[in-house]
Length: 350
Length: 264
Ligand SMILES: Cc1cc2nc3c(=O)[nH]c(=O)nc-3n(C[C@H](O)[C@H](O)[C@H](O)COP(=O)(O)OP(=O)(O)OC[C@H]3O[C@@H](n4cnc5c(N)ncnc54)[C@H](O)[C@@H]3O)c2cc1C
Ligand SMILES: Cc1cc2nc3c(=O)[nH]c(=O)nc-3n(C[C@H](O)[C@H](O)[C@H](O)COP(=O)(O)OP(=O)(O)OC[C@H]3O[C@@H](n4cnc5c(N)ncnc54)[C@H](O)[C@@H]3O)c2cc1C
Image (cartoon, rainbow over all chains, first blue to last red; front, side):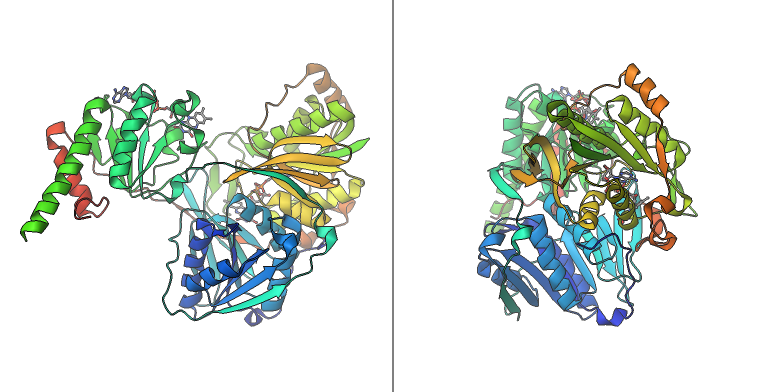
């Protein structure tokens, strides 16, 4: 516990080196968002010739630690104890705090997942430093200052936030924004493992039950095929699934189909659903109300299939198909299949 | 009896907030102010515990003098006491001194069993204040709770995580942040509102809290907002396509490497 005390600038910033990243996992699976953090962490570290240090905490973490190394981390700090099998704020914050005190990273990043945020500002306060929340752009300048950018005011504005005199410079980063790290063949890394004795006073939280839910993570999809009230019923989503499967996409939805029970809530895109930024967003029978647009307006290419030529979604669309979707979607599916067949035929000729 | 503190923030209602381009701060004078929505969900769980086992509920808010209206609203819903933490020195705080100031208030109140807050605000939505307060106080926390109950000294809550629901049980004292829309907040009662106005909102400043001016507000903030810029939205082609030309869409998307077909 830090007590009721102020944030404190560090006397010598040069003592603080390297980029730290906290690795979140469930069982033996590293969260995709943490692989993204390795990606951006590696990029920042290499830009200023520093090391990437990742922290892995759990019961048995050898497998994860190795995998993190293969992704391009230089030093993997692995803390093990049967008491750490499940994520709990107090012991995890304590262990990360101890690592920060020992390794003095200049920058420390976490994915802005719910457990990531649960932990992040607790660590910042412990370390008496600042933290920027939910960043979508991260960079580092020649003075090794972290340039942490986060969208604000309904995603309209990007605020650049600095932590000039306190260390480490901390940030959480929005899942689905940064490119996940790829495994690097022959990358040399070191695993520093320790068995920890967790102070019983930190284990007060009892986890009675975890009920996994099948969650569609649309934020990771490069292609989203989304349907709205215009589908007229749950069957419409079968057609969309067929299109999505054909082009390797995920199925999304506006809110009314979710409210009507045509599709589960984890598919909802928008202000009260997921915010996606895929390469391609196909909006089928969606009018484009502001609460929907808020969750997909950063899609690179937007195709709108809508009976109404004046649908609002058309204003932000690249390709506007004014048709009943029952005709347009099968036509699109056929066109893609034909295009594929032609390609194959050409390739065979050549 | 249980002592419960609910932390609330007054936020601008509309998304039409203006930004002061020089000071890089919010210009709050234009928009109508309301209690941050998730904070009302937090208050509702506090009130349910009060209904169940009896509790003293104190609502605290750090903000300008006009934020007393938000506190009165919470008292009109059933909170017993309201404290506005207000002082020029507190202005411009980032999440560190915000958490410190709130924690100092809670420490001064003493013997608090449960601290409630929202999961995040609708204005700067860091979600970092709650866990910060818990760390300053050295107590455990339950964040993103969508169901909250109290029994024999324990808070039992369901945390809503991306990949599942986690049901936890923590002995008091504990800090709980409540998920937006996780319950339906009860209405204000006219009777209670009149009582609240009669009782009034207490006002505490930096001297009452025993904090140093350089520890709080802008001066006590480790982060600074260096710049704000409009986010450019992607440009779009606005091509109208008839069904007989639908192959062109496919060809375009393939040539831009957005979809891959054939050859697999
Ligand atoms: C606080 C709040 C939060 C909200 N959050 C969200 C959110 O997160 N996500 C969200 O999506 N909404 C959200 N909404 C709801 C939002 O305001 C709209 O009601 C919703 O987005 C409309 O969904 P839609 O476009 O599917 O339906 P509609 O607006 O009814 O549009 C249906 C469209 O389908 C077209 N159509 C009809 N038949 C056919 C056909 N056969 N073929 C082709 N096109 C056809 C019509 O021309 C029309 O454009 C929220 C609302 C509020 C108040
Ligand atoms: C554009 C912009 C971006 C910002 N980004 C950051 C950032 O990245 N990092 C940073 O440290 N600061 C940041 N700030 C400053 C931040 O807005 C303030 O610290 C603010 O006081 C609290 O943050 P929040 O609204 O995000 O609270 P949250 O952490 O989202 O609030 C969670 C809960 O804490 C309680 N709470 C929060 N504030 C108060 C209060 N004043 N009184 C009583 N209860 C309260 C409420 O229960 C609330 O629901 C930013 C400010 C702006 C204008």
